[in-house]
Structure formats: structure tokens, C-alpha cells
Image (cartoon, rainbow, N blue to C red; front, side):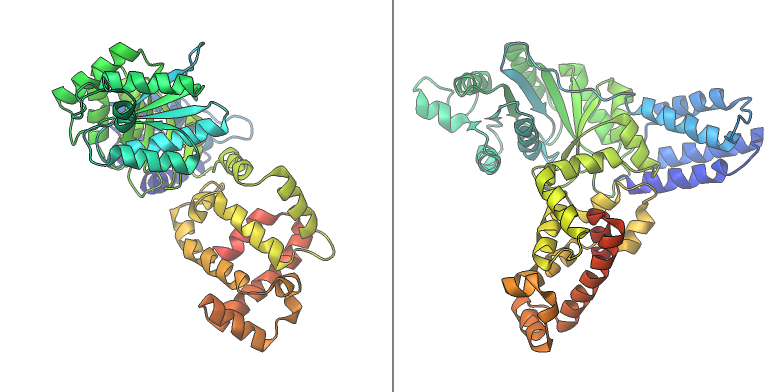
Length: 453
């Protein structure tokens, strides 16, 4: 996540953090390097200038205090100011006192708006907010069908133009000109279904234009939504700030959802949105799965950027993917005299996969940077190969791996479509892990370490 920005900024700070004494020249050179890193990452010039000035003011006359060098104090100042740059504190969604809460999702085509609508609905469903989706993009071919397919996957109701025209001869015309009537009918259907939140997937364009903004302004006036969330692609560079300003000036957006933040984008422009609009970033997309949407916390995001990790985020993903009962059972077996068999091992692997891409999980660990991730070679296909090998075993072989002789291993390799060397490697790693589990009693880290090689 934001690999280039994270790597370069951390390198710049390391030059300063180890020094016992910081001269005025040291501070000046260090801040010049930090400015360069931020500008190269597409953070806006004005925000970068203000950021550097705030850090400079606090760094003037910096003296050593007990157990903390001036260099370490400067790093702490940079950390605190980055938190401020990203919004200072986490801002949750606003909900209506009387349901349903209406949330408009706006943005350009290609920003991931429809997929994000489904991701947010899935998250709200987990939070017991009873979501409902309204497909209000009547211009893009198959947009309604896409949202309905996504809604079906997450078990959330979807209302679209086809529903209102089928249900009433007086519904919106087939050309979709009366979008306000369509959305109002969708909200009525949501209320009938006892939904507590309604997510409206509005139409996008290839660029901001008067027609789109007029339609969105009409929806805002007619519906008085509790939230207007801009869906912004983190990979669009400086355009992200321009787009955010355009939507904010017309609609007064209440928050931002950043998509594709798991890519290798510079991302600084997207992180400038709060400073330019004052609208807080509320969620970030961290993968393609429908559960890959995290709440945005400025302090935790700053920790990731400065390679301090995000243990809270890691725990949250683990809680979503692994039940307490399963975790306790596997932990107990892992540290028992008998240890985990390959059946348990398969269950544990599926739970780790459910937490998201392996490189994303490793990125949440303190001290993990882009170079270490490359060295780890966290290939998602590797876990799939291991799963295929274990599934090619009989239940008895999974429970008693010691019976796996040469002929059995050859059969398993052919059944999984892998080489016998891979089967042998898996069994060797399994034996090593058995020993390690008994010593450490900690399953997830050990597993990820073995299978990211």
C-alpha cells in the first residue's frame, strides 16, 4: 500500500532518526528530502509547503530530552503532522435518527463505484445496519445487472429501473430521465424491506460535466441524504484532487472512499483530498474481494506509511475471517502433544486466505517494507498449490502424514497436478512447523512465514 511513498519517506527519516545531535543544516537538508518525496508522490504543492513549514516550526531549537534523541523527536513530529494531513481522527458514517439512512455514492466511471457500493453494503451488513442497494446508474450498459449480481453474492436486496417499471405503469420512462423518481421508489422498497441504510449507486461520466452535476444536485435536493461519499481512484494522480474539488463545490461531499489503494500507486494526490476539501476519508479499498474495504484511520494509515505496521487492522481482519471457537481449537491443537494434522492445517490455511491477500497481511506487520515483501515472494498461487496437494490426500493421510510413503506421494502429486518435489517440500515444512508451533504456540505468523517463501 503506497509502497513508493512509504519506502522513500522512511528512508529520508532514517537518515535523521539515528543522530544524537541535529544541526540546523541537518534539519534543513532532511526537510528538503521529505518535501521532494511528498511532491514525487503527488501530494499537492500547497499541502506539502504547509506540512514542511509546520514541521520546521516545531523542529527549531529541538533539544535532546531524556532517552529520546533530537532525531527521534523529529520523526515523531513528522508522524504527528502526517496524521493531521490525513484528517487527524477517524470519522464514522452519520446515520439518521429515523431509518433509513440514505447514502449517495458519486464519482467518475472507472473509479470502482459499483463494486464499492457492494463492498460497503457487505460491511454494513456485518455491522447489523441492514443495507439495501439502489441502482441509479441508468446510462451505463449493464450497470444495474452488475449491481444485482453483486447484491446476490452478499445477500443484499437491489432495486433498479427494471423493478420500478415492472411494478408500476407510471414508473420512470425507459430512457431513465427521471432518476429522482427511480431512487425514491427504491427508498420506498427499502423501507418496505425494513432496511436501515440505503446505498444509491449514482451514474458516473468519463469526466465532470454539467449534466451529471445537475442530476446529482437534484438527487441531493430531493433526498437530503445523510452522506454523500465520493469514490476516488487512488491511481489517478493529481486528477484525484481536481475531481474531488469539482464534486465538493457542487455537492458538498461528506466523505471519501479511496479505491485501489492496494496497488503500487504513488497515492499522494488521493491522500491530499482531505487537505483540499476538508472531507474525511472514511474507507479504503484494499483488494478485489467484496470484504476488502477497511475503515480509514489517519493514525493507523500513517503507521503503515512509516512502516510501523497496523496490528489493529490485522486483528480486525482475523476477527472477520476466524471465529473465536475455531481459533481456540486450532491453537490448542497446535500446542498439544499430538499437534496439528494436515486436516487442521488446511482449515487454518483457508482462514488465512479469508483474511485477504498474503502480501497485504504481511504489509500490516511492523518493519515490513516493499523490499522485504519482494524478498518474501508472497505468491498467492503458492497457497493454492498447497491446498490442491492436501485435498488430493485421503482423510486418513491427512490425519496421519507419517504413512505417506513414496508411492502415495507420487499419487498425490499427480492428483494435484504438482511435482513430487512440491509434495515433499510441503511435508518437510509441515514437520518444521509442528516443532515451531509447540515452541511458540502461535499459528498465523508461523504459517505466513513458511508459505510466503
